[in-house]
Length: 154
Ligand SMILES: [Cu+2]
Image 1 (cartoon, protein in one colour):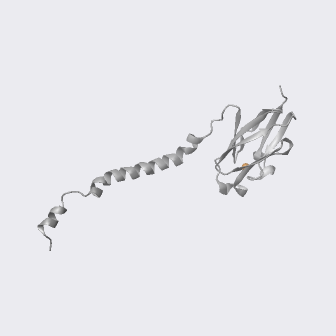
Image 2 (image 1 turned 90 degrees about the vertical axis):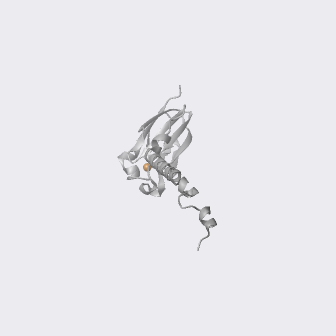
Image 3 (image 1 turned 180 degrees about the vertical axis):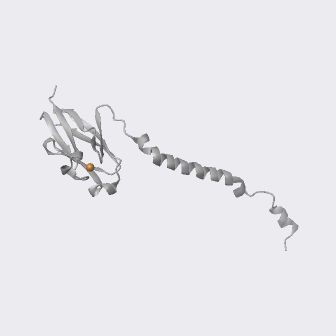
């Protein structure tokens, strides 16, 4: 049994606060889901590195190094802006590597990451092989190789 006072307190035809906010809550969820989808689909492009002046952008992927040839000057310190979009499950140990023993390079790059490698180029002009040993056959795979051309200091 209800009293007339109780019926006036919550009339059936008046929407509650939650009912009034429901369309906005729904819109918020839609925006959040769409935003997450767009980020997942295009986030790589938004964050794809634009190499700063004096740095060399190098991508590691299943196709090898991009670019496959890096030119540097002997005796200078360069920054490699090294990045990959590859997922961990495709990489032995979850990393790509960049190995050029003659040039003092032996670096690792975690899956789906980017790092700056500061590297002082030895004063040894020439053309050197650089490879990744952690995926797709490693050093034995012709794909996983690049060239580093050390030009004589000017
Ligand atoms: Cu690799």
